[in-house]
Structures are given as structure tokens and as C-alpha cells.
Length: 473
Image (cartoon, rainbow, N blue to C red; front, side):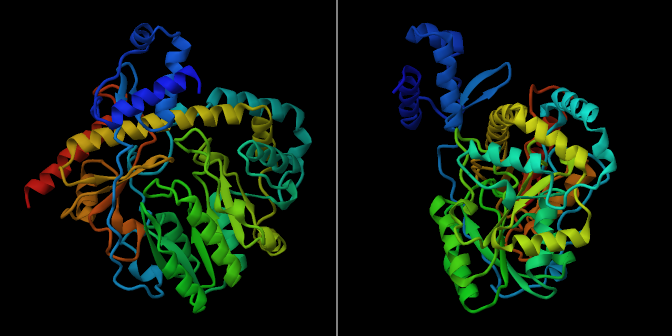
């Protein structure tokens, strides 16, 4: 064990024994180096280790603080009214599951601030590729996707110990497009698809638009109800499943490895395709990325979908899929609905990945989001009612909050009158099981408590609004 790891373990022991209480400030790097007679490099590595393990977080220009992530948070299992097939169109909120608002607010839509994106590096990359790819502008792109991009993706994920062949990969117009193609090519109108509960609102809108029915499978911080899933599969009640497995939106939590393996086992046993929405796969808050369920798929029943929309730039509209045994059917359907993806943008992303600039950016943004999510969570814990629950995400950029006895649909409506955008629990289920829950985005830095910091202003006003709701009860 290295010196910095030994020192980090000492800090972990002190944090667990509450010698360092939650929220307390740790010694500055220079103080730490002098106290332990170590180099600044070793001191920095010590705190980086603790941050990646989730024990501390940093506030810009303020220092390092003890986080609360190491304490488990047990959300109660959702109480679904029934566990039968449902038509999502019949239960959608007035403005749909993913409502749009007429104003911008950093707490609503799940995205990362443009200030955290490598704009200058991406612009230089696009200029380089454009100069040497004039002919590409006058050609139709390959239906399966640019070979260089598929190769770049395979090489990129190989470094994360997730190998696949470029020939098995399909390039799409983003993750949601990958999922749409999978749904349309593997199921038909009126079929039923098993989804998680709660489920990303955009998937509910998509399933409603495609006239697919759903059965919600509850999950909590302890995992998914696999017994219920196997029951509906065994009885032939579902024709496919659609699950996020890593840094799940809206909670930010991930399924344990054993459950990912179990999902693959069930899909294979009953020969029912599983669509894996893994758009947050690369945004782990830990040192190493968790593997997707697709990793354990030996028979090809899992269709793995991802994109750069959350990691790099949503405007690129570039995603991918590993359709497994359904590759031919998947390609046939995609070729009937569009004639490939923008070739120039594919070439640019291939270049950005091949040069290592994408990996460097992702590694940096993962650490930044780790800090930001902790900062948001600490603020909420300190300023919300004592009986509130705030999720402990191990990746991604959202928090799931439960405020007992607060109607979050009414809270959402009142917040919008103050130009605060949140997503109430009604956006993530056809059941009324999350009436006291809401999701917020943590993609913008809270920074200093300055008047011009929109994220901090809105978070502060939101907490005041919630406390006012509680006081009126």
C-alpha cells in the first residue's frame, strides 16, 4: 500500500468513528503536507483518493469537507397500486412525463453546464477534420456508422475493460434514438415492456408515443424486484424489457453486479430482449467504471445503448448501440427510418476519441460532477426538513429527494411561478407512488454564494419553498 493510500485509510477510519463529523473541514493541502511531513503531491493524491471513494468533497476556494455519502440511505420500496400492464398515455401528467418550460433553469433538465465542456478542444478538432474531409460532405454515410468511429468506440471502451467488436456496433442519433430503434424493431404496437420504477421520464414519453404498454418493476437502493420480473417473463406478460442499470435517472444509483448478471440470465432464460439504457455509464463518481449488464451477455439478448449527450455535447446527436443477436433486424429497421448519421460529426467524434482528448475530458468531468453532487447534497441535507431523504448517487448528475407529506406536483407548479424548474415524482411513473419525491439536476456548479450564481439562488429558494410547504401543514 502506498503512502497516500495508508494516510487515506487513516482518514477513513477517523471519518467512520466520527472524529471528523459530517460537514467538517479537513486540513488544507499545505497544512496536511506539513503535519505528516509528506510532499504536496502525496497530500493531493490522498484527498483525490478520499474524493473518489466518496468520503470527502471539495468546495472551490473553500477547502475540503467530510461528505455524508458513506452513510447509507434507505428509501422505502414504492407502493405500486397494481403490478399489471398499463398504457402510459392514460396516466401521463398534463404536459407529459417530460414537460418543457418557457425559461431556463439549471435544476430541471438533466445536463451539464457548457462551462464544463471542452469547447476550444472540440472546435479545434472539428476544424482539423473539416479541412481534410471535404469529400465527406457530399457522400451518404454508412448505415451502420463510420468505421473509424466504431473502431474508436471499441478502443475507448476496451480501456474500461468492456471489449466489443466494431462490427457489432451501430451509430445512431443519440441514446434515445438507439432505444427507439430497438423498441420498434423488437416489439410491435400494443406489446408490453417491463421497465424500472421509477423510470426516466423521457422513456415513458417514448413508450407512450410508440403505443407500447408497460409493467413497472420497483427498485430501491437495495436493488430491483427480480422475483416480479421473472414472474411476468415466465407468464409471457412482457415482450421485452427496458432498464437503466448504472447511475439510473432519476436516483443516480446503480444496480449491484449480481443484479446486472441476474437481468442477463433472465433475458437469456426466457429469450426476451433486454434494452439497456446506459447513457450515464461513463459518469461514475468512483475510481473505476462499473461494467454494464451487456458485459455478461454471451447469447446476445441485451441491446446496449449509449451516447455522448451527457458527457460531451448533446447537440452532436451521436449515440451507439450493440444490438447483439438482433443486429440484422436493428440495421434493417434503422435503414428504413433514416439514411445514416451526419458523417462529418462522426469523423469529428472519432478524431476526438482517438487523440485521447475525450478520455481526458471524461476523467476530468467525472471528478467535477462528483464534487458538485456532493455540494448539492450537503446543502439539501442542511436546509431541508429533518425527515427528508436525499439519494446517494454513485455517478451521474441528479439527486432524488423525498419530502414526506409534501405534494411535489403542487410544489413543482409553485416553483415554476418563481422560475424554478424541478421534476416531480409524477414524471417518473404511471403510479402515484412518488407523490412526495422530486429530481434535481446537479450539472451546474454552486460555486460561491454570490448573487449572480443562478444554481445556488434557485437551490436556496427551492429549500425555502419546501420549508414553507412543511410549515403550512
